[in-house]
Image (cartoon, rainbow, N blue to C red; front, side, top):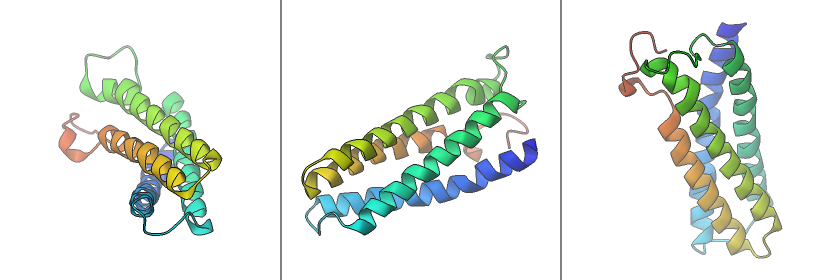
Length: 144
C-alpha cells in the first residue's frame, strides 16, 4: 500500500505542476489584457485546485505511514525535510492556491480575477517547486 501511494503521489505531482504552470501562464497573459475571463479559464483554475487538493490528501496519508517522517530524528536531513520542510511548504502553497481561487470567484471584473489567480497560484507554484525533493537537494542516500 505504501509503495502504491508513494508512486501515485509522485506521478500525480506532474499533473498538478503542469496544470499549475498552465494556470499561472494563462492568468498572467489574460491579466495583461489579452482576453477576458472565460469558462475555459474557470475550468483550468478549478482542475488545478482539484489536482493540488488530491495531492494534499495523498500527502496527508503518507505523512502518517511513511518511514521518512520521523520527528525524533530532526538532525538528519532526510527526516527533517519530509517531516517539516516538505509538509509545511506544500501546505502553505495549497492554502494560497485555495485562497486565490476563492477570491477570484468573488472578484467583480475579469482583470481582478486573473490578477488574483496569477498572484496566488504563482506564489503557490514557487513554494511547491522549493518543497519538492529534487535530486540535486542532496538529502542523503536513498532519498527517493
